[in-house]
Length: 317
Ligand code: C5P
Image 1 (cartoon, rainbow, N blue to C red):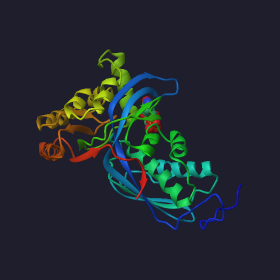
Image 2: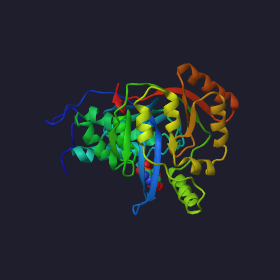
Image 3: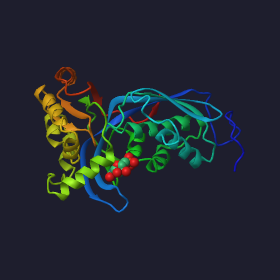
């Protein structure tokens, strides 16, 4: 065991800051979510196009003699803040990687709803890695942080990078996608209550066994081609999510949310990841605000937000 690390940095490798460090991290949606077969390790083989959107959580990291986590906002009182929390696991994983004691006082300000299909927990883990890397002065490259992230969850590496990226394997192999610098306008309709990701994958397997799910999505090529153009209608036509029928099967009311958004003028609506959040593509920012207002008036969601993407991943403010 190494000696206790001093926060004033008696280790030449470290460039600690006096703190506090504030890190902002976005939510993700999947523009294409192709789900392949169930693997022996319990994960499904995925081909996905991740897209980071402007709905953010924020982590503030301060020096501390122990590792503590507090939170406010979405999910406060519901989310366990003990060793099972992905933030705590991320901080311990970074400490083990850098061979320093994982000491910090962390506070999470949460806006990304929990169990919503927007990778909020994974986003917080990515933010914790970036925050403690800055606080402790470990100065790791994004690639190193992404490598640690693989062990924390399938979506965590993407949230270290952000932007728009292709995800393969179980989602953890991330490669940036070359796109035009276009900002797309989305509406996020947040549902009452969450859906557990494993249950949605299981439901898809069940529907497939019964022959009750549509055929798996084919290549990402049409979507990637759409991202190279500026026409939102072309992008709208290329969106797809294999998990959507499973999420709707578990939460039939999502069909009403999708219908309400499309009636309100969205170019396309889709379930975000494993749901129950629904996302809609709008032609422009004004249309996105109008669709968000209509969705809230329709009573088919808890609230709706107009956001844009792509945005950067976890970053120090
Ligand atoms: O990787 P992560 O811990 O976020 O995954 C949560 C759960 O989602 C897994 O335990 C698994 O049930 C399901 N999953 C899957 N296939 C993937 C990713 C996640 O079946 N590629």
